[in-house]
Every structure is written in C-alpha cells, then in structure tokens.
Image (cartoon, rainbow, N blue to C red; front, side, top):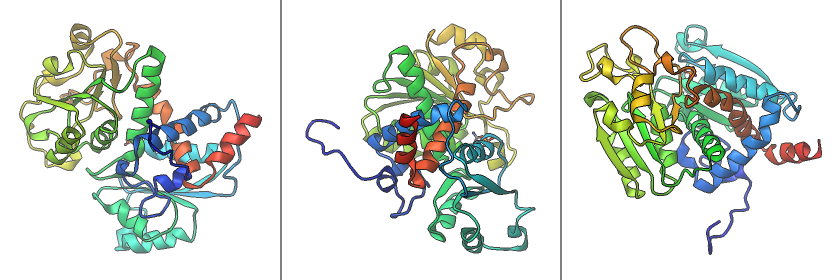
Length: 344
Ligand code: CP
C-alpha cells in the first residue's frame, strides 16, 4: 500500500463482492490492489494449470456453465479451470437446448440452477442479463460476456498477460502506451480492459476504429477523469507508432445489421509489414480472439503467427490460471490452495 494508506485485510472475495455476494459481474468491482492480489492467486495456480502440481480443493463441487451465445475459449477454459481445481461441470449451450426456448425467464432458470450446482458461469447476448441471473441466486456467478456490456474475466487475463510480458522485459504498466484497434463500440473486451487499465497511472491510449465503431463516450470520460491521455484516430499506421501494447479486436458483426462500415478498408488490418514498419521490437501484439479469418475481415493477420511479439496464445493459456484464481477466490478456497502449494 502507498505510504499512509491502510492495507485492506478482508478476504479478497469480500473486497471484490457485488452487493455483498461472491459474484463477478463487472471489472468496476476491482481496485488496483485487489486486482494485483488476484494476480498473485493466478501465479499460485500456474503449476496446477500446467499439471505440474495437483489439487482436489473443489472435489464434489459442480459448475453450471450456461452459454447462450457462441464461445470456444471462455466456455472451455472456465470448465477446464474448474476441473483442474477438482470440480466437475454441467453445461447447456445455446437457447435451442435450454428451456428458455420455451419462454422460461432468467429468474426461474437461475433459481432452478441454484439447486443443482455450486457456481454459475453465464454468457448471454443482452447487456445486464448476467446481473439479472446473479440477483436471483446467492451462488458465485461470473459474467462470461453480456452482449456488448462487459467480459470481466477476459480483461483480467489480458491485463495479467500484459503484466507477465512486461515483467519478463523489465517494463512497468504505469506510463505505458496502449493502442486499441477495431470495433471499440461493441467490443466488450475493450470496454472491460480500458476500465482496468484506468486503475494504473499515466497511460497513453490510442484508439483506432472506423468512424461508426468508436469507443463509447462514457468510457472516454472515465479514462480522462483518471488522468490518462487519449488520442483517437482512423489511421492505423499513425495509431500504432510507439505503442507498447497493440490490442486488436474483431468487428462484432453479430451486434449490428450487415451495413457497410465506413473506413473499414484492407489497410485496416494489423499485419506483419505494418508491424515491422511502425511498431517497436518489444511491442506486444494482443487480441482476445476469435480473430475473423474470412475474406474481407481485415482482422489481425495470420502472417504474424511466428512473430515473437504475438502474445495471443500466451494470452489464451493465461485464461486457465486466471479463471482458476477467480473460482478459488469466489468460492473462498484461495488461501487454502496457496498454503497447500507451499507445503507440496
Ligand atoms: N475471447 C472470447 O471470449 O472467446 P470466445 O468467444 O471463444 O469465448
């Protein structure tokens, strides 16, 4: 803690609680200190995530994994994280195979699931819907993406990745320059990440989006109020210059009608030639994935796959220890795991 600042001794689950409940709905539940404490728990989980060590701390516990929107990495990595802690998973994917297809409400679904499982991870296409699930239960609930709203666990693992990459290079997050590229209007991962980054000091943000897909004004206000510098540009070449981190995102076509996007031309693609021309040798290239590889998508180019600056698969790997840490904290076993790992 800074000089004169009291250290918060409460368990991490209490410090990040949502309305007093062990639930993760928004990154706004975090302060910098609680975020850094969560990263320490994720560090403890690293050898378990890689099966170098084993824990059965959640043996007998069942995770309810409810995904009403497409997902690969969030759904599977939450499930794998729970299994690595010794628990097991029951899931339903899509509306078609849940009784929501018969008109069942979020409230009833959540109440019913509360009798079956010990924690819930929910993805749903409507903003605010996961909070509605959470209000109907006292179980730990994690927001795995609520439409264009938030994706807190993704932002946490993104920042954890930045911290690990920077630590390897002897760099600090305070004072860094981050360039965010792509669909900054509907991309929930950038909405959550920019809020977490705003907890740090003296950052420069360069926001690069087609004119119709710019970052919402309320987030620009929040970042400015925290004393950071923001520049907005439609030029990728100009925006990437000097960045320590480039965070590219997919255009979220599923969130708006298929209208043409002004300024979304082939020059908008983050590709090897551009990165070599304007980025630094130690710039980190990130993306929450999936990247859109279809013709005309202009997403992060596959020609960067062998560039060591590309951190996207280190990012996905970090999803396991970070999500294990979230379960351990919200289910109140984080201290126990840390103690048992010290004893191994
Ligand atoms: N990053 C992310 O949320 O990926 P999925 O949609 O595959 O879960």
